[in-house]
Each structure stands twice: as structure tokens, then as C-alpha cells.
Amino acid sequence: MANHTPSPAAPRTPGIHLPGTFRALRHRNYRLFFFGQMVSLIGTWMQMIAQQWLVYRLTGSATMLGVVSLIGLLPSIPMSLWGGSLADRYPKRNILIVVQATMMIQAFILSALTGTGLVQVWHVLVLAAVLASANAIDMPVRQSFVVEMVEGREDLTNAIGLNSTIFNAARAIGPALAGVMVAATGEAGAFFLNGVSFIAVLAGLFLMRIPARPQRRTRASFGPHILEAARFVADRRPVLVLISLVAASAFLSMPYSTLLPVFAKTILKSSAEPMLAAVCTGSRALLDCRSPDALTYGLLMAAVGAGAVVGALTVASLPAQARRGPLLTAGNLLFPALLVSMALSRSFALTSALLLGVGFSFVFQQTLGNTLMQITTPDEMRGRVMSFYTMTTQIAMRLGGMQAGSMADLFGAATAVGVGAAVCLGYGMFVAWRYPQVRNLA
Image (tube, rainbow, N blue to C red):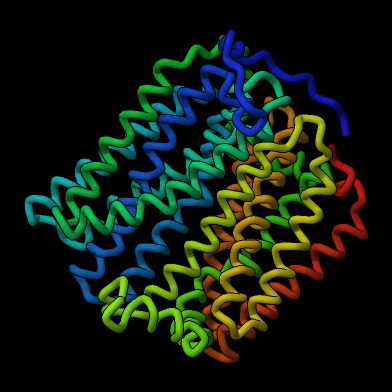
């Protein structure tokens, strides 16, 4: 693999000394991005939960919830590829400003329609399509922009690990705040706060000092521009294998999260009863549990979230000289192996402990894979290659949820999770044996 000379980046802020876990925050531009993104992601998770609640309130149909999810998938292919092409042609900060402003306006429109009582299902579907399109452009641009906000590639792994930390923290905080807001003010309040939250990330983008970079001038239209990146991926075996590992994990292993409600309601029900009895019943009950199974599900999800935050911080703490290839290989094997164990478990306590490891190993695997994708890709190609990476992940996860649901209906949730994870584990072992160049990536 040829070495690519790093492009210059904004200088570090003098006089700031941070622990290794947070060393990417020494870079002023990344620091502005980090705190703005932290606020914005909480708002995004609030809107996701409130939007699902609104659709169900308006229609009473679980099918319509699936339609909203499908609308989130459809724009991901063309818009992700277009976003990657834009990122390699134009300044990434400018693209992000336009995209983030679009998402902010979308949130305010949905808030106004909901707050005035004028909202109809078709409004939600149209605005969901706008949001999905903007997000599909945003993801490859934002991911390829990280390397410009830190000094070369020395702190890239740390920055991506910190990004995963705030994403998973927002995933825990946002839904809880959404529940409070919807109960207190209705869905409109959650949508409005999401719109306000974009001000933080937009302010950070405007305040950044990004050195002028020579943009790659090309007369190639969109199609040839994308085909150039596709040929690069096909010709670089490590890059192609990294994308295939992400696809296999997203399609075969990640759907476990879709089936966790089934584990909570049926498979672990009897094992969780002593815990539920202590928490929900009796004179010393801590909660008035109207839906005890929902509490079980919430605790399982909390275990995943806690493990994910620890995993992200662990990756962020890795020294710059750490060899990421062997660590990625370990994560590729540990994640499905823990899921196979979870599928065999009938104990609530053991499953919760295993899910801590699942959350840890998933984020560990994904963050290192993201880092290696960016390190092995030249600057002028990074946006388009990352668009293939993010598009593959999104499509595989959604299709994986469908196959896991069908498998669960036919053979049971535990079998669906166990078989999918076992196949994913087998593929991870095959890659570790057949493609040592991936295992040996720095």
C-alpha cells in the first residue's frame, strides 16, 4: 500500500495539555466540532423518538413506522454517493453548513406543523425524506472532514473514538429527554429543541479556521467520478475487505438489537421476574411499572449503551503508534462470539453482562474500521470511499433487520441471532486467515 502524504491541518491550540483519551481536543477546529456535535446529536435522537411516537399517534399503525424506516433507506444510495463526490470536489465545511442548516429548517417546520395541529402523515413522510437525504450527504462528508480538523493522522483514531463516545452518550440522553418533552409539551417541543440544537454545530463550523486547500479540479461528471472511486476500492484489497467486514457485521450481527424486545418479553421473562418483583411490586417498590417487560428491555439497552461508551473511550485512549489491524481483527471475532453466547443464555443477569461486551466490541470494531478506511485512502478520494463505507453500513443494517425478523418468525429470536452471529464469526475467521494484509494494517 502506497503511503499518502498527509495534508496540512489547522494547528493545535497552544498551551492545552489533555490526557491521552482526549488528545484530539487539542485541535481548536475539532474542539468546536466536538462540542457542537454533542449538542446536535442529542437533539437528533430526541427527534427520532418523537417522530416515531407522532407517526404512531396519527395512524395507530406499526406498518407506517416501517414505511418511515423505508423512506430513510431509499435516499441513502444516491445521496450518499453524491455526498462523497461533493466532498472530494468542494470545501467540506461549506457542504456541512448547507446540510446542517437544511436539517435545522426541517426540524422547525415539523415543530410548527405539529404545534399548530396541522400536521398530517404525509407531512411527516416528506420531511423524513428530506432529513434522510440530508443525513445521507452529511455522513461521508462529516467522516472525511475529521482528518482535516486534526493535525495529520496522528490523532485520527482518537478523534473517531471521541465521535463514537458522544454518539453513544447522545443515544442514551436523547430518548430520555424526548420522553420528558413529549409528555410535557407534546412532540412539537422535541422537534423545536432539535432545531435549536443545530445552532451549536453551525456556530462551531462558522468559527473554524480551516486552511485553504487546493481542491481537485475535475471535469468528470457524477457517474465517472463515482466509478473512479469504485475502481479504487476494487483494486485495493484491504479497503474492499474492510467494507465487506462492515457489511457482514451489519447484516448478520447487528440485527440482534432489533430482536432485543423479544428477548425481554419472552426468552428472559422468567429470569427477570425476581428483579422486576423487587423494583416494581411490594411496599418498597422503586417504580410503578405499568409495563415491566419494557423495563427489562430498557435495562438490556442500557447495558449495550454502557459498553459502547467504554469501548469508544478505550479506542480513544489507544496510543498513536498502536497497531490497529490486529485490534480490529480481535473486535471482528469478539463481537459475534459474544452474540452467540447471548443467544444461548436464558439468564437476565448473564445476558446483561454479555451485552456490555457486545456494546464494547461493536464500537471497538466499528471505530477501528472507520479509522483504517480513512488512513488507507488518499485525501482526494476519501469522501467518495467513505460514502461507499457509510452507504454499505446503512443498507446492510436495514436489510439485516428484515432478514433477522423473518428468521425469528420462523425459528425463534435466539436462533436468528445465534445463526447470524455464527456465520459472521466464521467470515471474520476466514478474513483473518485469508487476508493477513488486513490484520497487519498499522
